[in-house]
Image (cartoon, rainbow, N blue to C red; front, side):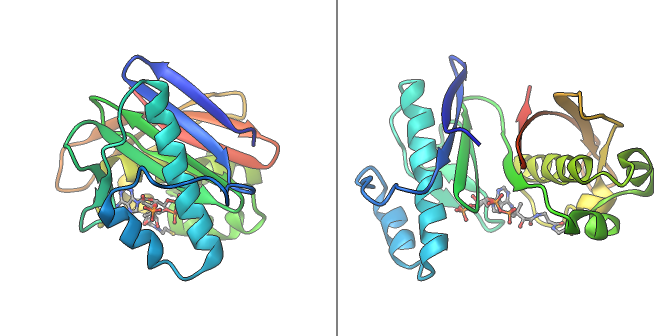
Length: 209
Ligand SMILES: CC(C)(COP(=O)(O)OP(=O)(O)OC[C@H]1O[C@@H](n2cnc3c(N)ncnc32)[C@H](O)[C@@H]1OP(=O)(O)O)[C@@H](O)C(=O)NCCC(=O)NCCS
């Protein structure tokens, strides 16, 4: 997937970063706590992905002229800005990282490669009604997975099941926006719209408003 920095509005931006060749990029903008977290990652690939995601959020913030506030993780693993300003979501996978920021709205973002095993995993994350319209298609399954992960990250709390609590409306490969809802949890139903972009074998999805 192509590297890009996109200003979505005056209050929101996203960045996708190819994480090969970022070794020389500096992380001096990180907070003290983030520098510690980074230093504690022992696995080289994980370290590179973590770095890529922070460089991506820095680029997204630069694009809308906001300073990097530093981010901390809550007990669910979701990142929050240290100055309590805005919402962020991060994702990283083999060779790629991405981040999205919005000043006023919670956000979720996800990157995934289309893989054969996604169909076998279907019953673990899909409702029977979704399996019906996904037609055993690898790309559609990967989009469904990615969209559910974006919705999950947008709401942020553990305990929400992709299969039992997130339901997608039927969609096709031509649709760039997928609609879904969180239901059957302790909270009232909440509806989401998720933007989908496919490039070669990579699916990017992120919540929109
Ligand atoms: C947390 C989860 C969304 C992470 O997704 P992933 O595909 O493993 O990894 P990604 O690279 O896309 O995202 C990782 C980022 O998600 C963010 N994240 C972690 N927990 C989060 C949460 N509860 N809410 C929002 N964002 C979260 C973090 O920023 C993390 O990056 P970091 O560790 O560098 O800070 C995923 O592990 C998960 O729990 N999914 C839903 C649960 C589920 O039902 N899974 C199995 C179904 S078969």
